[in-house]
Length: 345
Image (cartoon, rainbow, N blue to C red; front, top):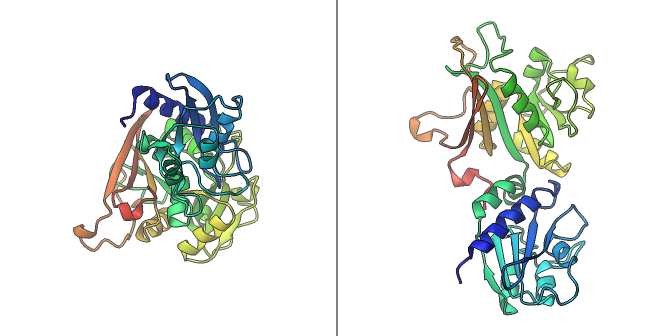
């Protein structure tokens, strides 16, 4: 059975609803219930851990029997397990839903299998509708599920000729206010911001997410510093509203594992050429944000150092996903081109 335009529009709306939910241990999911004639009967989304899943949230807005023969349009395959709530696949079957359209399969071993359960009960199932859009929404969550570590975004600013600093080490400001505002908005979307001790000692960053007037944004990433050097008591990062967490190990995998255990799902790395090169070298980067300032600096201050590329055949190939003009600057958004390095489904 083909997917109708009505179902595609409903999926687009379900993705909008999903984005209202909080990011965290559970995925952001939206659901729409359509009547046999294509009218919207109810909408729902997942409001956070311990609350009803999106399908059940939508069903709760209908009287018993009102969903009989309906189509459920869901951004993620209905779950097939009992946790804090019951299996959504069973709830849809019990409600008499005749058809389920979903975007992405559930990657978690404990929850997958909802589609098969629905088919076994005689429900028509259509997967993969607006899958790319759903994948973008759930990218950090799917990285955690697939790779068992937080989703890592690596950011740096550089001159057109690839320098992160002038010959004397100064780097403020390669980019302008529009680019810096964009960085702060993206910091506020992360659970933790990571820098190296070299950058902290040289630049004294606050590692906060701030508005243009300098005030703190509502959500603040946890400040994390990697390196053995002592951070002075009067360092700006010590005044962060969240207590600084320092790792003295060079084992980045261990750092990410610890952060994951502490509930961190999205890491924003913004910490100098040495640290960012190490993340690249170890294949621990899921997304790159490269801010290009229209300046030429020359000299030794390269934005990226050794990333274990002895020959062109070993180059880290990237997929450019977006290009944004931010005032006089340009932002390149890229992801590893190799599927093995991606957290995608």
